[in-house]
Length: 265
Image 1 (cartoon, one colour):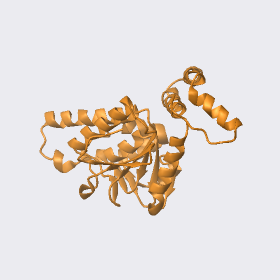
Image 2 (cartoon, one colour):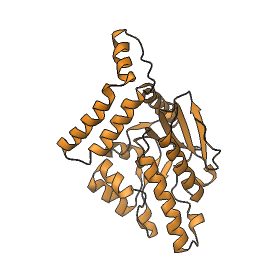
Image 3 (cartoon, helix red, strand yellow):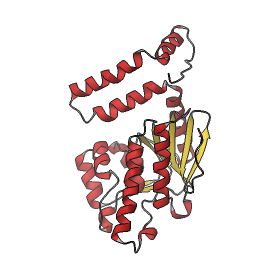
Image 4 (tube, one colour):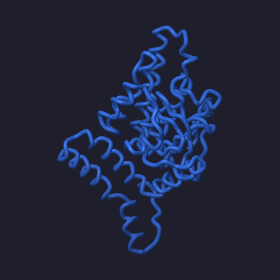
């Protein structure tokens, strides 16, 4: 699959099925500006429409200091209310497109993740973080509040009380605290972060892509339902996999004691 040449994103295919995406404004700690919002929307929309051979994405930040420091406040300084709201609507489309992307996305936090940067990570399927990174939603200290699903995704990840503590105080937490809270899945040594995230991404990419997508949908939407309704949703997703070539290939490969060759059909 081909992508346009982005100004604020760097795309690096890792084999045929895995894509590494870097937020690429290291000179400003990968701050989220209008152009990056547009390009993120374009990327997630393209992957939703036709991912081609890509079966998993790892999202990280360029450089060693930051995943994303949040919205570019220098760009916002002096903005009219109308322009600010229009810009934020663009950001909203990017967040929604990421949440709805059927391709699994792993966030690899290689440094600070603040405000909108942490919200981008929270929209991903799960998060690995480098030891020493700082995570925060500091918007209340700047006269705002989270507006990139932060109040929704953080509470779902760590519970209401932890979310209130982080958002209302605006204080940063360490990766060790984030792991203890359930906000990140794994704390990695900085030099090992990408290797570990990419290894997990490759494991996902090697699995049956239809199965991965259906399971992702079932978890994501089913958790907003009561147990039995969620289970019925799960079975509908499950039944769509029974009459697929990949299901037959998976069983055949198991019987023949070999690695399956999934085609996404």
